[in-house]
Image 1 (cartoon, rainbow, N blue to C red):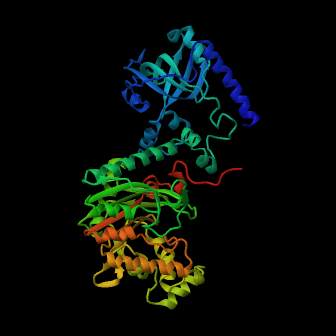
Image 2 (tube, helix red, strand yellow):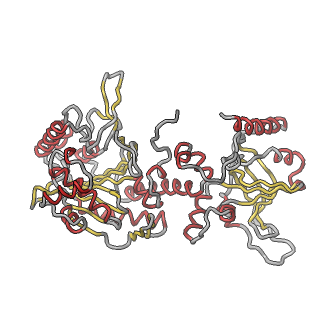
Image 3 (cartoon, rainbow, N blue to C red):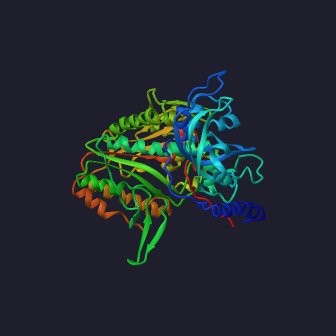
Amino acid sequence: MNDSSDQYRAARAEKASRLRALGLDPYGRTFVPTHSVAQARGLCPAFVEGAAEQAKGEQVVLAGRVGNLRASGKLWFATLFDRSRADLYREQRLAGHTDLEGAEAKKARGIQLMLDFKVLGEAQWQAIQCLDLADWIGVTGRLGRSKRGEISVFVEQVTILGKSMLPPPHQAGADSGELSAETRSRQRYLDLMMSDASLATFVMRSRLVAGIRRFFTDRDFLEVETPMMQPIPGGASARPFVTHHNALDLDLFLRIAPELYLKRLIVGGMERVFELNRNFRNEGISPRHNPEFTMIEWYQAYADHERMMVLSEELFRHLADEVLGTRVLRFGEHVIDLGKPWRRFTYHQALKELGGLDYADQAGVTAKARELGIHLDDYPTYDRLANAVWEEVVEPHLVEPTFITDQPTWLTPLCKAHPEDPSRTLRFELFMARMELGNAYSELNDPDLQRSRFAEQVAEATAADDDEAGVVGGKIDDDYCTALDHGLPVCGGQGIGIDRLVMLFTGQPNIRDVILFPTMRPTL
């Protein structure tokens, strides 16, 4: 703690001592609000121009942080903010307000408190004089309008709910209320405290997750939990994190995907399952990647990847309708209309029509790889090189909702091959805003073919010394293959990245702005 913080803390500690001397706990006790600030604002009587006295509304009990605080003799004015400022921010944004960070817009996301000595009396007035910006308080009073028409609570009782020992950043000498990107991610509590936009993003995230859960439970899916520590990683190509269980003297791997365990449950007869799951991949950090991330994966017996396409469209439109209130999303400079028909390209078709390359033209694809600065030696096969080129030349064109189908079999060891062409799979990837958002299969349910695919995957990873292939120690998940021996019915399955979905729905270009506590290098 620096000298400045010590100075602010000392001044506030002195006020906390004064509250104790008045017989009040500066850190509060249980308090039950009757309304949110947003609800209270909606209940306030209308302003009557020219009236000698404005009508009072109903009594409300509110709680939140003190924002603005201004003394005028025996009448003090404060602004109270609570979590509903996120909803009020969103309403202002949808209404087309152009200056969402302006003083008037911010003030309208709180509610004015009128603190009058004549109403409150000497004892409460002494407590009010111990208030600082960012303190938590509860108030009881009647709704009404100030002489200028501002929605207000005419406070009759004040309750201290939590003394803030440090001031908000803008009071502590910051040039403005803006925090650096670094501070926002490291000290999310300050970000949420200062930024209604950030709070709105995370409120939206919570509601999107709740909407996803309702979507699947309403369709008779069962929510399940599968292991986050696994003896053999599987279900994705990624480098896992390793931990050690002392009692069992056993190395375990943090989950890179829940797929193999969820399909075991379909074998067992659960028929429709989903899991909102945390996964961990020991890989790089970027605006679209965090080592710890959240996914929704679901599996449905008797379905296929075509049925998963239908569910994908239904899910996104459900979330847009129920949570966002519009099917038109804005992501940077792009406008994405979920209500329009979603495009479909095969993997090879997309390379040709969007990327301008023919997969069969090895010389042309290789030349493009060199042009893009891709190191050919990093790719042991032409197929892997061509896929790296595909990502570079095709993904920039995938702004509107697009299904990419028929990926190569070598790329997808857990997926059924196309009956007319075994080199292709019954799979799709879903892209929007130049991001991959989802991945779905008609699941491979032939145990012998699955063993063969796993063996090929291990051989290729071993030959290439590839520790990002999801293969550790040359092992395959034999128990999963045994589960398939017991019979996996025809099955469709899909995964969607929650973090990227939230990025899309909130218009955030960086994944760390939709994760409350993103992975960051510790400060020294």
